[in-house]
Image 1 (cartoon, helix red, strand yellow):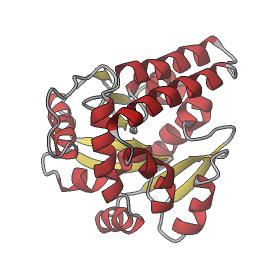
Image 2 (cartoon, rainbow, N blue to C red):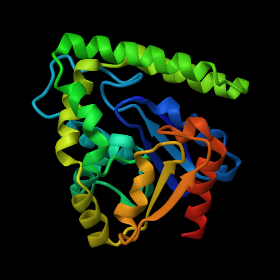
Image 3 (cartoon, rainbow, N blue to C red):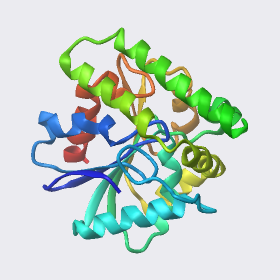
Length: 257
C-alpha cells in the first residue's frame, strides 16, 4: 500500500474515495495549520501507486481494512483522527470492528456518502458492462481534468490537478467497479450514526458549498450530533478547490475538540 507519511502528534489518517488517490491530500502536508501534526495519506489497493489485484478477490473491502491496519501498526500509531472522503465512508463500520486498529479520537467526513440518494448516478455506472464502464470512467476522468485545468489560478493548483489526472491513468478500474458495489451496500445513514454514536466519537461533516446533493445533508443529519461545515467555492473535492479552508477546519477543530 503506497503511503505518504510525516511523523508527529496527533496523527491524521487521510483515506481517499473511489475517484481519488493520496495525492488529493498533498495540501495537508503544506498547510501551516498542521505543521506539528503527524499525517498518513494512503493509496488504497488498486488506486494510485499501490499495487493492483492480480486476481480480483470475492470481497475487496476487508483486504483494504487489513492493509490499513498493518500500515498503522508498522508506524506504531496509538490514536488517530480519521479523515474519510466520499465513498471511503463505507469503510467505517468495518474499521470500527477491527480490534487491531488504534483508538479513533475523531472522524472527519469530507463530502462523505452517507445517504442513498447520493449514489443514484454512481449505481447506474457500476451496472454497466465492464468494457462500457471502463470507457466511461476514462472519458469522465479526462473531461473532468480538462474542465479543472481551465480554472487554474496558481502553480499549486496546477500541481494538484495534474496529480488528480494521474490517478485516472494508474487506476485499477475493474477493482474500482467491484469495490464500488461493496460500498453501495454499506452506505446508510442509520449505520453510520449508530456506529459513531455508540462509541461517542466526535464527528464533523465538511461539504462543498457548490455540491447541490451535499447541501441537502443538514436537513438529514442536523439532529445527529455531527458538526456541519460548508466549504466555500468548492464542490465534491474541497481539498482541491479550497485547500486552505478545508485543512483549517480539519486541523484547527482538532485543537478545539
